[in-house]
Image (cartoon, rainbow, N blue to C red):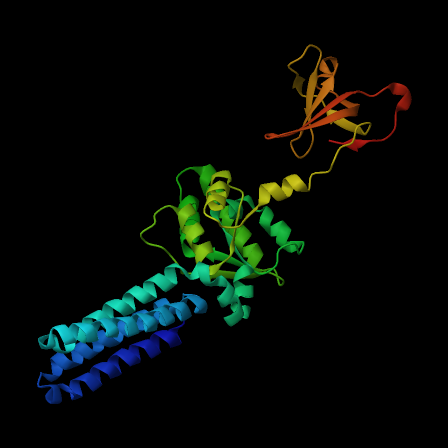
Length: 337
């Protein structure tokens, strides 16, 4: 919030109070009482303006539309009530209209997802912009690989970072544990790197959901509100978002999809680190953490050897590569791990 906005809002409240004070005699109340009431009313209006500025325009539209039709329904009920109880007076019209406006606006806002087809026609630009929102969670910021992906130009749209994520990141950076503290500092360094990229738009949002304490659920509600996608590498948040109908971009899934594929017969250079489960087996790892089981590799523990891939097994836990020692006569250069 800029200082100019604060000054304008303060002037609105002060001027409203002055105008209210001048109306005091006409309303047969003291100038002080009328001025205070007008200032409080102006402050309430300013608060509504602040809240409305954070709500997508399509939700505002459906709220106003729902409230309008709610008022019409409420007035119809008020007319029926007035005919049955003439002594109810203006209250007989006002109360049903007020309740109808609230009900219509609340239902329209809560069910705006059912009106997305109409929304896309009325606000095509807003819907396209919302679809480009990528909401970052704390884990993916600390992880840092999202910066490399953005730098390579594989992510379009706007990276949305909520204030409650920054707050969680600050708590980690202020932790008494040195490891957590370093992770938090790394997260802020990654954000600074993202903001310094000319082709990447980073937006900090104040949208929050105070009744919800869990950060993961806040992220899901934010994604629903702005129509964006959650970017994470957290397995639990991934599943929770999918169950909630929110699109997810998982950096781990991306990394898994970009792993180089091994083919049977390919030669790889590996460093045998430990024994395998079967007799005579040795185990090595590629740079990306993929396990390589080397048949008869036990006798080469602690040494770097060339192996020939025999098969590749894809499991839920990841990839496993089975291999055998390369025959000396077929010695050629290979991939190094």
